[in-house]
Length: 341
Image (cartoon, rainbow, N blue to C red):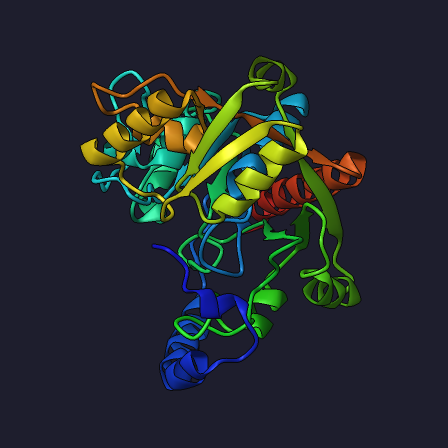
């Protein structure tokens, strides 16, 4: 979906008109979040958002994958597979699956880490364990109560924040903010800007850590694109952030094409982008997530993906938090196992 502009403006007549629906939606969402989930039998780290749309969950999941592997763990990602037709549980295989099967983010991540897609996340636990997991990395699902989380990391964009901070459909929040804050273990603020300052202050005041991070482009790809006029396109939660990242790397973005998040590129879309790039002498560049959807077309032109990695200002502090939560989970399991009776 493409986010309505009024979500990112001060209270408007549209948000006021939709406020009764937001009140109902928020009450249902809050009641659902209060439900008790099943214990997966493994440590569960959830990477989520307070709001709909993207803010950098996928780079965060991949950064945690690298961290967990450095700790000797075997992470497996558990995803709902948004945008895919398969209900699962299914282990994502880039050799046989397409984005239309399992969703773009799971397909992209599966090149780097084992991924299980399951529309009902709890149903996917068994298959995750069969993949040899020692830790479950939940991609999204913070508001979903079906599985108990041992660490809930919430990702927010520093420049966008929470928009008008209203609950859907009057705004972008997936549930009222208080119950979401209560279940947040740490906040990850990506990029600069002050839009996230208020929510970061509330998380910090509750005695929970706030981590700062930035998206770091791949140096080899930046060098390959340097000096070339670019037509950049993206169908992610915040295409403008992608375009800013390109320009921040010193690249010559001549034209931008923004599509809704998870946009299924049509043959017409592919032809239009190819023709525009060929006519004006532009090189095409997009996100890794968009490329897995774009490549499904036989006539797709050459497109350069623009990989980014997430760099934390204080990686040691995040690592310490992760280690502490993993140890607490395993100690609790051991005590429960040794309990009499």
